[in-house]
Length: 230
Image (cartoon, rainbow, N blue to C red; front, side, top):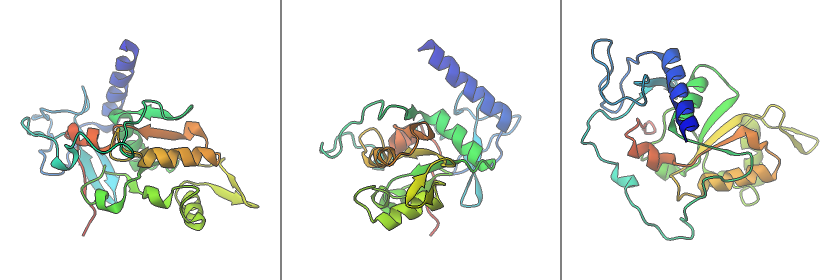
């Protein structure tokens, strides 16, 4: 446990050293300045992080109102199971389960031009309308539901978004992207369904990261969300 905490602290400090103080605020939050730092930081030494979302810079930070409560859309605790059953902590061998600091780390790398990474919001558009993580790309789970979705659509997603090449009818994963996938939270089976499908067709497990907490945990921590442009 101590080792994990040290690892997360190190990640936060490394991000802070790379990013510095952010000057762009979002969702009505207050921007940090050198003489007035944010009272609610993401982590020690990490006040906020600037990422790109649809060509616009967005500052990921926590809500500065210390009496803020969770978005009602994500406050429900109980849903019928199945299908809304609690997911395990480890989804599949080789697939790493990650938390918010790691997601932010990948988002920052993407925004800095690393094209080998993609953060994927697996939810359907009606849920994305309620808000998503800045920098994430929406690929609805029902379009990437391998074995059940239209095979042509699946192949287009693999080639266009995930960097998978098709050669003589076989998928080649040599240059496949590292995909960070999430949906609504620990009870949501959308990104897990897509991850299991990718594994079945040979997608390298080490190139798949799963943000288990998803939007429910992101919202619970008061982190910045964005909505699609109207």
